[in-house]
Image (cartoon, rainbow, N blue to C red; front, side):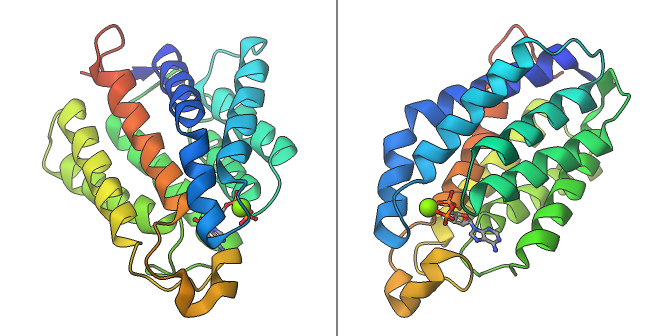
Length: 216
Ligand code: ADP
Ligand code: MG
């Protein structure tokens, strides 16, 4: 079952594709409670990351994640760039030197990534941010790993939890980021960052359970 660098690259490719497909939708969500750039930001950042990955020749998974993190930090402005950049840099730190990782290693990397986002953004659960999709996904993945579920099932559960967390941001009042400037008027809209975070998990399910690079 271990995930190879090839599988990780397939996931990131799928992330880039899903973000491109949903660029306008993400931007529309950000238009309602932000500054209408989240889709454009994420698409630009992942395109830059894919370009850098194409010329990366390191054998380990950590270098792949670090390359993505650095590309996001360098090319994406606003809150999303540094936050997602930190997330991937932390994934890279957790998988440095590894040519294969097990699902439990992916979970540990995810924990490091979430800690990075929380440290930088200082958001709490329920603040209507990307963490509201990422934390339930992490919890679901942790439960699935503890239960010894196969990777395909574990990831499907994590993606479902991220989707639930994303939808649960709709009634919330934003307490962090630009949306918080709207106060009560931010309620009734789905958070763009929680939506892009769900797409990262959806992309993992697509990439790792759709044949070719099956995760188990
Ligand atoms: P900006 O708001 O600077 O234009 P983006 O539009 O790219 O940046 O990203 C907005 C998203 O970033 C929000 O929808 C939210 O999910 C996330 N976000 C904003 N501030 C924080 C924070 N402090 N912690 C975690 N996520 C945050
Ligand atoms: Mg924005």
